[in-house]
Image (cartoon, rainbow, N blue to C red; front, side, top):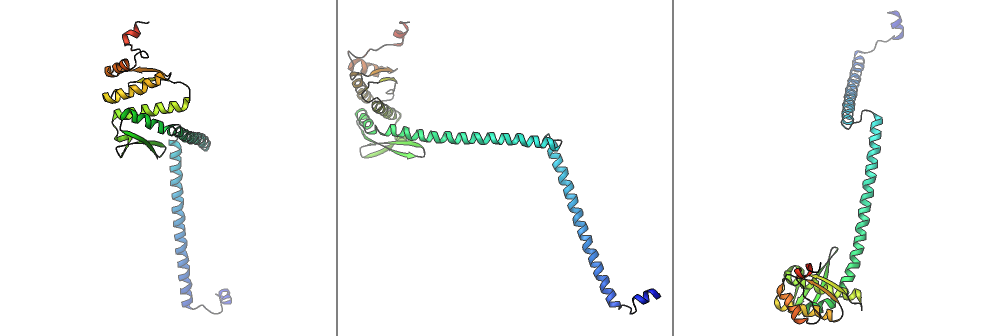
Length: 244
């Protein structure tokens, strides 16, 4: 015991030894906790590695090189999709600009269209419009009431479109004479409005316009024949076939 006695001439109190023992046990406990945490982290990383390997295998990538190749392909696909999206956006912008130009073409002769429309219907004396998004929605006023397009009958809408078409052509052609091909726009009109509309169309013919009017409506055909003597030729389908 002499060497120990020389190093420790005074023995350490039991209380101090007990305190040191407690500190060592606490430190050992902390180290055990850190060991368990590291073990859990290691197991988690191993599980994630296994999941990634399975995902790569499911995607057809058996190694890092294949994965890099797939990523390059995906990047190319994404770049192409972005280009298409930008092209679609530019096309939409062009369409919006074209709509603005079309609106100007339609609205400039609106007063003339209203005059023609009133002559045909005898009721609607004014036309107006509103913008709804990128569309132009027209309204017709008559008898102190304004009607939207959706409130007009099929026949009245056809008469409105005919009036607008004639007014737009007048505006575009200026002093030139036009050529019209009409496919039964008066089919659903009353006889009174048919008579008025035929009168409008015959006035264009008298001014030098050429008109080809296709119809299955005997009333309209008779009106053209009666009111357009000398300037109207009525032909049946069999007459056309006989010329070939």
